Image 1: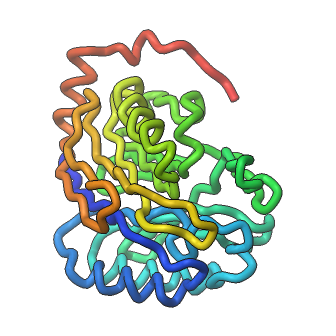
Image 2: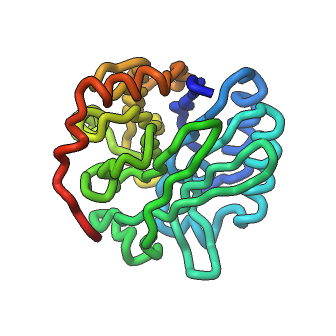
Length: 255
């Protein structure tokens, strides 16, 4: 298929209460039909908490819920959760298909200003997921500040950023999302939470869906719980990259 119907859920999160957050998203997802990809915020079961991996829902519970919702909506469901795994606690972006298949990416860049690097294990692998003819790059919050990690190697069409990005740095969030779309000649979707967390940090949202030329297709209103929808075109993306092949002159990087 050449089109992708994407939905981003910009929502508040209940601090450290996995069951309450799943109930909230149950209600929202019950009303969503006919979409291909539905994105929830970073740490959608807890909020951005350093102790979340040891006090939240188990990995099996989160995956079971996502598998059920993906089957119910017939869409891929994505969002990150703090999980206790065999390699230790991780901030893991889960992408779950309607047939139950699970993809995951562990956050590479841990937010040292909140001591995330002392509480979670950093991911080591950049991941690209294929879904309904689209190549999708999952990324998490602080990853947005490191463009080499998300450099398009002509291997993805859409980059996803899920976040708990605080309001005082919202300009950075919005500017960097647009920059990632333009420099990588790819669609970008950023899903940020709203509300106030248990540490007193405020979140504006400002979620966005952006086309490869940096134009905003859907924009999350500040401080508002809302749903963003956009229909993406793989044909339009390919035509743009052919007409303006800046990607052919990109500098090589190795990590």
